[in-house]
Image (tube, rainbow, N blue to C red):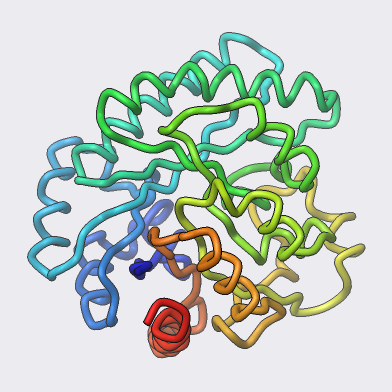
Amino acid sequence: MPRLAAFPKAFMQALCKDGSMTVSEWIHLAADLDIEGLEWYAGFLEMENQSNWSRFRKEVEDQGMVIPMMCCSPDFTHPDPAFRKNEIVKQKHWIEMTHALGGSYCRVLSGQRRPELSIEEGVTFAADSIHACLPHAAERGITLIIENHYKDDFWDFPEFAQQMDIFCMLIDRIESPHFGVNYDPSNTYLAGEDPLELLKRVSHRVVTMHASDRYLAEGTLEDLRREESGATGYAKRLRHGEIGQGLNDYDAIFSELKRVGFDGWISIEDGVDGMDQLARSVSFLKSKIAAYWP
């Protein structure tokens, strides 16, 4: 049966940039949720001090939870080989971090969709870089998970492999028992595509999932397209919504995941409007999991 984790989407600035929230404060907030785990983010300010790793693991486990997944954002599509080599070094560090925290899954991405990059160049750069990280992950029992991503909070350009065909082209280049897909249905809408079509193409490789629901506060997806490149982070018109209240068909999603035998972690990206919202999303997902994995 799938298990639920939560990601501090509402507190990324506080945890990663201005330090106005401590990691311990987030752990204690999340302890009131009916979940089994916390998805971690490599960019938490306090994670720069390696001595904190074991302390945070103990704090989470003392609350009856675990840290199953690491969210990090390697940028493997830069045209400079030295830059990509440094990103591989960073990814290996994040794999070490995941292992120290007791996690089993560490995210990888393709990288930023730089205007000068061809599709073949980007796929090759990303695939070669992920392959370079796989032995390090395998030695530590870590599975690298690639997300059909939109854009990291701190990137200038959207994800290179945002479009379904490019994403599938990339994962087809990587065959390993230590590599799988972290499926995020909302990101597919932002690519102007159907999340169920993508899921049916990759469901046999999905090992973890982000539960999310997105909506545009104003304008259209075409407006979003015009402003998403060259501006750091998410467009202001883009919002994370309460799970079950947006565009995603969770009955269809869970039906397909059940069909292929999925039993991995589902991490909730929600709570931007408060912890009560996050608690409602937990309840919604708990009821759906009980229905599809009784």
